[in-house]
Image 1 (cartoon, rainbow, N blue to C red):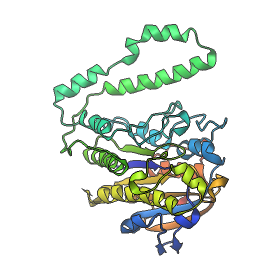
Image 2 (image 1 turned 180 degrees about the vertical axis):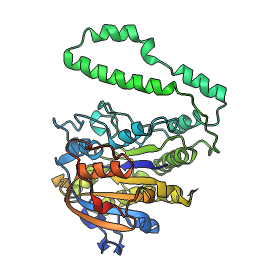
Image 3 (image 1 turned 90 degrees about the horizontal axis):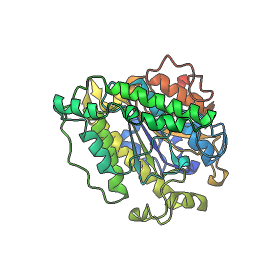
Length: 382
């Protein structure tokens, strides 16, 4: 089965730090991307994508949903995000439709990257142990244990129906419509829980013990690897901090003082390279681990599309531009995507890029994603 993983880090990239040199298929990775060199033949690097709005707020909303924020809040006017679209499409295939993870995740509404079809944010789990316990809860159960767990989750709505009726009568028309939409989504998920659950048997690693930035990030990636290897879910995401990245103090252990956002504002220096290079190192760990898992005639990476995005594009940070957005992808060979390539997409729309990813993930019935994503970018395919 195909899988999808999205990693978000904030604040864009300086082009001199990020852009490879060379040709489309023969290129040298930049200082930031150099940690990915062992997997270069599995990478698809793209830039030249154009977002509809500039700035952190415009980027946060459009990066995963294809919907630019209409009020400057960073919150999209609609959903779903691409990870949640796939989670709904594949719901029922696995015990968990998706898992949303974070490394020091910020919690403001403008920091979110995963949204339901109703536009509700799905907060990231910042504790590797908490995320691991979610995986443990649906693996290695007896049929009786699985049925008991399913029954306990059967209907939240029925339990609170009287309270909901009381609240509904006090709401205005717009708020009532929004609540109804959310309750419909909850009911759909409850119905999915009523389907017989087939317990998963899988060798689980030891529970994670993380006490710093690097160990937390690796532990969260280990959770993704376990979830994919054991068939707990086909969709996962990881968000580092929020729209401004990880705050001051977060990078002290790698010898960098200050938060990602403030360092980006101070100019393209060695500290900014160090932060983004550290991010690439974490992604390289995940890519290598997935590529080491044999699956069919290839590896788990061949069946997994790994996507690393920022809310801002390439360019001077103070411009907060999205006129040259960039993406690191890896794997996805069995989705038909190009590997071992560096492409300039020459002004293609970000929304069309997201739409293209839905096609790569098998959602050929869709005619649009986000606000106006309707064109398939054929150059992404082998």
